[in-house]
Image (cartoon, rainbow, N blue to C red):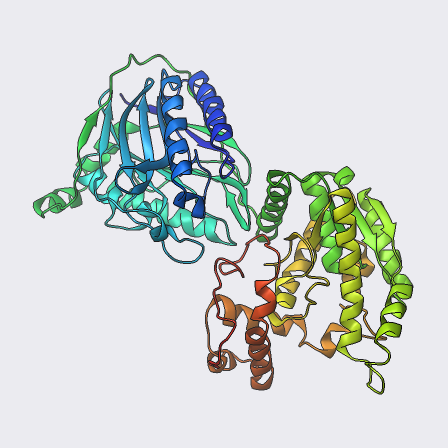
Length: 575
């Protein structure tokens, strides 16, 4: 067979929806059959959704996953299907089922279990060392799972060299963060060219709690050249004809494989023959090529998808956003509308005596530009009632952060009241810069169900707002919002810079300390002012207790608060 047609099904699976995920597998299998594909591959743990986390500690969940697979297998006729699931013997495995014409012919168990960042697979799974290859109509292929392909001398090495695989199918659930797509492409191209093997990588798409999977499935030929790529942040069946004949031709011209075969190959590579099928004529296809996404576009699309899936997969229909007239709440509302539609977003302005007329006007303009319902709930009388109640206790003391936080908590209470009454999910509007240093109020602006901008630095918030204005028919975020100095407006004339360094200074310090684990001394050596660095680091360390109580939010940086960040609250280390 000179060519082999493969279909990569980058699906949006939902954790725990075993029957729903199986139905989705069937729909994509039918589409792959109609495309006359020889093989269709689905992402890692496609049946259970990824990551199932402590559902894996429930025997009933494991058993149901097995039952769903057993019910699914006979329906996968007329094609070879690779489906991610949880396998079980005396322990459990992150596994791939290889089904040929309605029969389970083999199972691959993941070899390398990631245990860093957002991954915790050693908590659940056992590793395995067997790396089978499968033979269909004279074509040999290997199957492995996500992390396995990131290791140069891993399953791909043994399947291609010892097993003589013509191509490798890697099924993945590789979470998104900024820039990861480029790094992933380089790795896959290297793995293909080093092993002189075609690499077909299929990735999950969709949001799961704070994680977003970007899809963007990829195929590289034996020289490391890109043959095809899937779309970003969308479900898709990517159909590609693999030039199998070229693999052997290229290997004849490369002496490295002969040298490797002189060495001892340690892999356990059983060979499994699949029932042969009669090849049918196929019209030629031209796989799609995608334009690279700019940094703002890929982040924006990740935020939209992450927000949409969190809201919808958790059974909500509408969301509510506190619109202050500032940049963060404006961008949050825009993302919510792009994710859910204007009919499902409600904006609420809650002015106090310190809120400027300009801010209320900006909030109203954003709501009108988006076409969302807009409520105005003044809080001055409520605030005054609080002050009267506390007047005796606060007697003789100057107003300070206590009075400021009361205003934020009143607003949080009003938003939660609307949530309770109407079932709307409250979207918080704080960004990563503020959450990092604790420039936010517990049970106030932090009160809500999902933090859209939780992992977005303030300087990036502005770039995303400008990007969104550029791609629309008209600007949805007014210039006045983009140009005015950031302010919480909790006391007269307040500016963020009264408490914090300018965000252009703050954000690089936060990135160095949180994402790169640099010490204060190392950050100062980068050219930062020592007094500012020490102050920022102290604020980050001191406010871990707040971050533990924050709602989840979309991860878009290499290290986000939540799964990525496990700093002890009680902590006396000062680097």
